[in-house]
Image 1: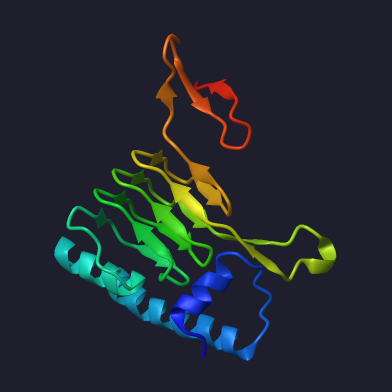
Image 2: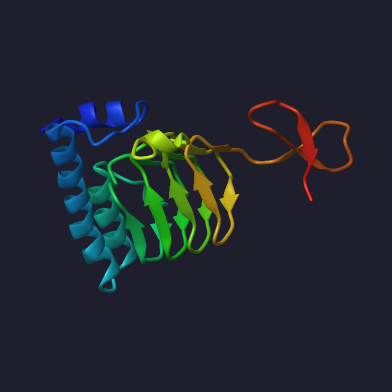
Length: 181
């Protein structure tokens, strides 16, 4: 079986093709581990401190005391979720995190939001290949209820441009501005 760090390096940058027995075994091991922790999170009431402890076990590292969420919460892996301070998830969120989910400080995530870091290859003859891509939510971002964010997307807060009367957002890929409605 691969080490967690080997698996995360590979899955966050290369197509996942269900290739080696070691890779499949590693994915299954961590997925089963996540399922056990999620069953504990989602099937009974816990005080906020206990929820933070369970979430820390899920992602494999401590979370800040300012982190909070309302269950149920779902993920298929868990070990590639990275949280800043003062982060909140509302109930029903689903994270597919093999490609990496990076959440900055002061981020709010609404009900039933989906963050999906794996997508299928666009070519029909390679459709079984999964293409990972990280998701980055910068500081102060708010993702509204029922939104879906897909692999390779970075979300930044919109800011008022100097000398402009309204709020504009900058497109990540082109750098051009568009008006926020």
